[in-house]
Length: 257
Image 1 (cartoon, rainbow, N blue to C red):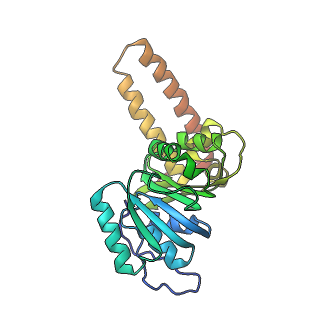
Image 2 (image 1 turned 90 degrees about the vertical axis):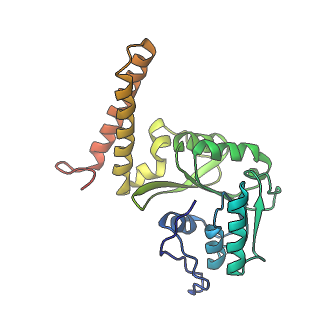
Image 3 (image 1 turned 120 degrees about the vertical axis):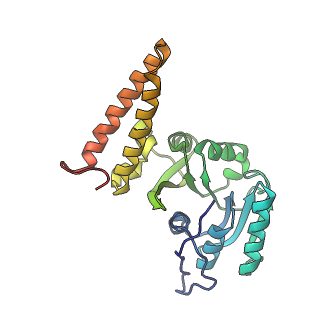
């Protein structure tokens, strides 16, 4: 799940200790999470996120969950190598199923599709009901995920776009609460990202437009009425996102400049 880079997360006392190496993506996740008692990291892989958070004193305990035995063994070995067996436990299982209600105060789910994250939260509803924080990094399906959060008693309180080795990642931090209904545009790109307009937003919009143009081009090859309607919807979506892009990029420049 996480590729290794040279970033580290310093502890509250200024010392790094084991110096857990993080990718930019995982470092951004670690920095975004507020201090909390215990975190369940679903799809923990190398357990670097949990290890970095323990190292920094941002969590007291961690539970890493892996569905496959290979990553599970790797995470167990990495935690042991860092000497964190007393603070981090790696469990084999699917989603939140290996976690008991009330056992953690926050959940991280990164490097998977938004639909998968929604299913994890729905299937682990009893555990999710007792959480204070959700730290999420959907690879796809962020729009559906944001709508799910809004409709299920979560408030998006922080968002970020992070570039890592040529790829762009969305990070969402949510807490228990309510928020105003999201527009389709806010759900697609993030209400706080749209409000803050970070430099990476124009790239994200360009990527979405490029993707829709590719789909529209495929539909051009069909003459069916259903595909014709779909093509009109895509064109309307492209025009809306192009209007957003024109507001983000100064005249005479391009998204890649």
